[in-house]
Image 1 (cartoon, helix red, strand yellow):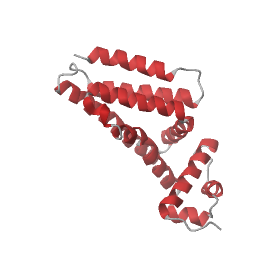
Image 2 (cartoon, rainbow, N blue to C red):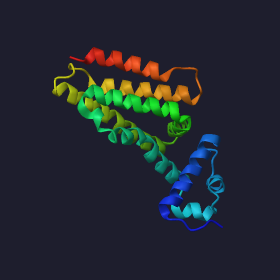
Image 3 (cartoon, helix red, strand yellow):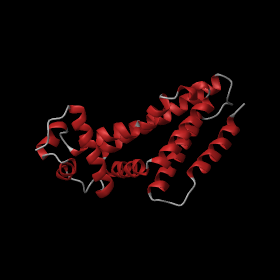
Image 4 (cartoon, rainbow, N blue to C red):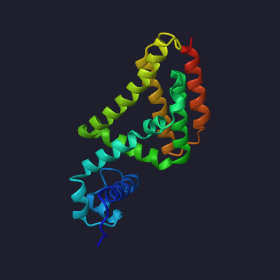
Length: 196
């Protein structure tokens, strides 16, 4: 029997176990029983904290998809210019690609599940739209502050997110690539094209 733990500790234990299961087996093949076994808890202990696998998925999505922005917000020096925002996000994404390949394997599993499940798709879409909107707003501030030329900020923001997503996928499948060099090169060229 598991020892009593504070709720936040127990939830962390469950989410970490679920992530390992999702990476190893995929979302569809993972059962609540698998999560309980991996977490070394009873099935009832899992259901006490999460009513369903979808609730666990939602909690993991909220945690996972917000990671880049939380790391960025912790480093205020990036906020001095629109280009600083973009390159700061790039640096954080690159560091995550280089240091935590399981993060992107998990993101790949979560994104794959969202393709076929409407509820999960809506969760993913909300996170994606938030990230794109954040970049878009940063670019628009750059235009209003005279740092950047007029441009379609939504299209540029979507392209930046697609660039990151592409490298997440390539790294998740262990492709032989150089994400740091590639991402920095593309974003440097992109920013040079819209810089005043």
